[in-house]
Image 1 (cartoon, protein in one colour):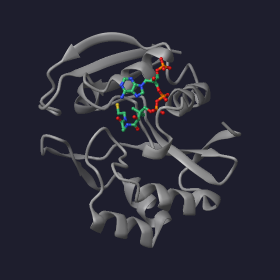
Image 2 (cartoon, rainbow, N blue to C red; image 1 turned 180 degrees about the vertical axis):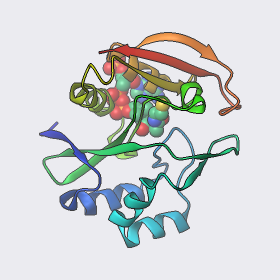
Image 3 (cartoon, protein in one colour; image 1 turned 90 degrees about the vertical axis):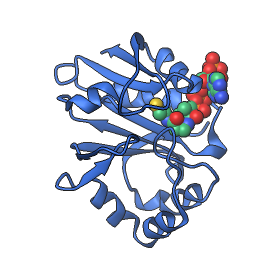
Image 4 (cartoon, protein in one colour; image 1 turned 120 degrees about the horizontal axis):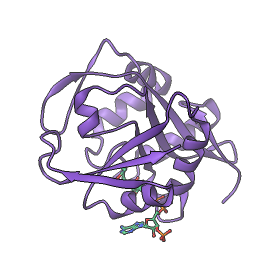
Length: 184
Ligand SMILES: CC(C)(COP(=O)(O)OP(=O)(O)OC[C@H]1O[C@@H](n2cnc3c(N)ncnc32)[C@H](O)[C@@H]1OP(=O)(O)O)[C@@H](O)C(=O)NCCC(=O)NCCS
């Protein structure tokens, strides 16, 4: 591993690398929902505009069960290696979560580009994110993951995550959802 930094997305120096990640098979920002060709084209045309749009809380988003809900305030970061290589993405939401995110989604969501998985990057990325947090603002964080996503469960546990419960969330009806707390 080279020098790793979390930088507010998108960063100009890593944009070309991000575009190369976007076309890797099974690249995703969640644990499903791969990008369609049309979505990739839309992102590639103007990456900063895409991120600006994602941060627009006047817009809605669609949950895995089809519910349409208002977007919450979140800050997205890229994990960048040696200043110009995009490795992954992590999103931090404001501490006060709406009910659906308390059930499915939590405070933090992340993904690693497929070609870089299995090398410890997600564990490191979550650690860097937790280190950025102010303990008064975030006395703990809630992170949820699909019970079958063993890699993500491990990433959370290796960062001090304590399993609170495993629920059947209507927002992710296909799978059970593990809810972890990490005390800061
Ligand atoms: C989940 C994800 C972020 C893990 O990223 P990663 O960089 O591969 O994770 P790490 O390399 O830090 O591995 C963490 C642990 O998971 C283990 N692991 C990796 N892939 C695994 C798999 N398929 N099954 C079981 N364990 C796995 C690793 O061995 C490691 O444990 P170890 O240190 O004891 O060996 C990545 O697979 C991903 O982006 N998936 C798609 C998006 C997603 O699921 N996001 C999480 C939503 S909650």
